[in-house]
Image (spheres, rainbow, N blue to C red):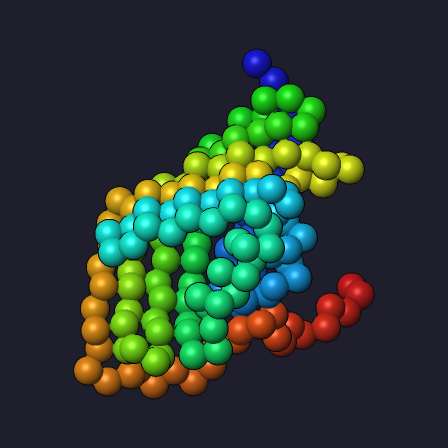
Length: 164
């Protein structure tokens, strides 16, 4: 069996961009990574969320991760199977934390993602993304923590890269 390492790495980069784009509510990045007819289905301990169509998905995600929200999503242990030149599947382990500053609700948990990817014009995109929680803790905080920085809407300040 041979591994298609370049495709696997490109899919890893795609999913990493997805996690970063969720946490920064980067609408353009999210739009670029989903197929037009994409589907998502997320099952948590306190919610079930489904959406179809790239515009519906991106709209729902950017509304959920609003300007009074802080979060971090980390994907680990990818298991990616490249099925053909233009189809692949992946399993990811998610660990996340979020805080809605309006409601003072903090959520911490882990989930297993199962994704389907399609390659279009040489670029991998998300066709379907689902997860089921394996752990979820939801707490209502009495007081908000002293958050000194948070970024949404893709306004991440990154130092300019200088040549070596």
